[in-house]
Length: 492
Ligand code: UN1
Image (tube, rainbow, N blue to C red; front, side, top):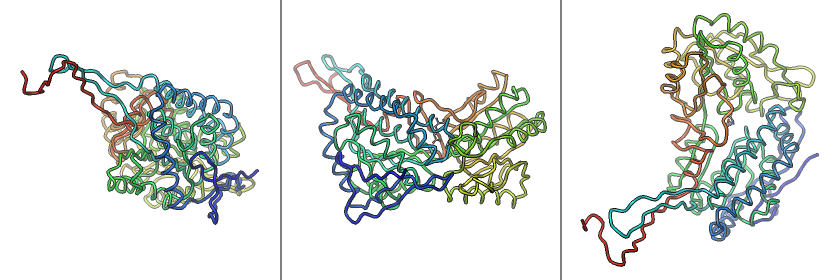
């Protein structure tokens, strides 16, 4: 069944006259899934107008009331979890357990943010003068543009939308074009939850047109973007011109370190999930295995045997462990990295090719791949965003940390060891926004901050209560109840 969606502007689904259309397809079967409008600059302008107009009433609504609407949305996400999870799997290709997980992460986050409506804390601090009260309160930034990727087509839009909404902002949402169906269904949930018209608007289409129009519209106050580092730089530069608040969540090159004393089977299961979950298409995916020399051969042998048994196929089939990669572009890019690895002399241990024959021929299926590489080679440094694991051999913990840190990214990291001292030293030294001990690089929970350092972003964090930093302005308030003019710094 092919679904059709227009733009959602000011509370109405609209298909502008003479609209250009595009569609999304399943990366596992090639079947068409949805038809959408390629919004023009003028359409985006109308969406921003709607968001502007809805702002005064929405920001005036007490935050706990806004929270009630978010809770209603969370309930609907829960009711539709099965159907939405299937759509994630159909449109993006991750296996069904992970498609459902994507929706669960949205539910968790929307519920969590609804609670924030009864907190949204500022601070009170003493004044240097008598009869004077000092405090801070949080106020919305205004109109927020949420520009989101295809790899978590339900969770990541909600990380941005729910946080922006609870803080009293209104939103124009642009999903990745290849997962527009998931994006449209997210918006429908909020519509059905009773969100007032104009508070959340949907503009589908390309980054070049729709993204650009959002970045250059002076009425957009804040941008929250998740995607690749090169696009991130452009988003930052364009936002800077308008002095907008820009939050960026970009790539990763996440290491899993396994030391000689690690519980090997645990480390192996974690690695398989971290490296090949979502076919490696997570910002948090494990793309480097850093192995201490004492267990190097033994661990690699087990790893290769296990990777060769991974079941790759129809992501809707619950017995499959990996589905296709998300698009032809993705496939080309990942095969390009395999080629680069071969050229640099990296040793292929397993995989390294497109899967063909039977149902594989209808989609973008790649074999889970492991290369032994040398630190400095391309696959040891660049984000691949696919099911390709680069293995690096190190002499000891100190070298493991040096190698782990010697990349341009710093999102997630993981270490497997039974030595608690070494584990904490890793927490101190690994240059990353997230460190896991005895757990894989993926699996962040919504009540904790999510984000990274270096080229992974520009300092902000999503999720957790600190997510509100990206979506609120701090107002400082002085109330002088002394009844006379008091002069700070002068009256002493
Ligand atoms: C991402 O890949 O952009 O920790 C987000 C995880 C998920 C979120 C990943 N909860 O892997």
